[in-house]
Amino acid sequence: MALRIEREAAPGVVLVALDRPAKLNAIDLETAGELTSLWQELRYDESVRAAVLTGTGTRAFCTGIDRGAEVPQPPSPYAVDDPLLRVGPKANDLWKPVIAAVEGMACGGAFYLLGEAEFVVASREATFFDPHTAYGMVPAYEAVAMAQRMPYGEVARMSLMGTAERVSAERAHAVGLVSEVTEPGGAAAAALRSAAVIAAYPTDAVQGTVRAVWSAKEAARTQAMAQAPALIALGSLPPDRQAELFAARGGDGRPRVR
Image 1: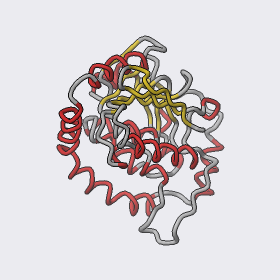
Image 2: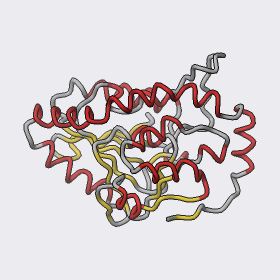
Image 3: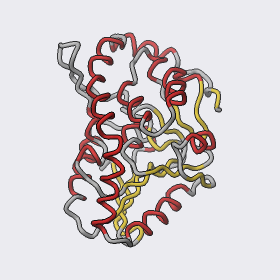
């Protein structure tokens, strides 16, 4: 199992942890499948009224797709098969509230998950960044997800600066990506406290509220996501060239935090 699941982590709340700390909780194809199955399962579980999503360990919440995952692609430049498109709760028609708890790094494909959480709680040592452009890749889906949660200029800067800098938890809080900053190691506990409050409310009203808030941005998000496959296919370097850039930057120091 690539997920660690704690049912009744708080009354009516399930804790879902990406459990690949040695890989910085990167998502391989097995993890992607487990996330999809779990969100679909929770639709039918009346004992679960809210969820907290986190990562095991303090080094990373999630660092996106596992670089070792082999994902076959269609030959058309207008089509991209992306295994992360179904890893979030909304992609699986789950309207129970999900709170993300971030310790350490959250980058790249992690934004598929953060983009579908109701809100984000983060340790003050958490950082957020998107490395795609540094490796010759277009972060289309990630940028669209973050554009729903952050001001345009902040999303553009994070997407374009790549590995050169990271957004601190304090900055993420200031621009609206993060709703609460905790002491190191305290993000999951804080998220569980909020989830327990929400889980105690009438579930139909809660799920209706989740759906209503999501609908406020859904139309624009759907239109933007529809452009992503072509932008990725036409703007990204060939996989072998991406791998060369990734290997060349592997020994770089930590990017600047702002």
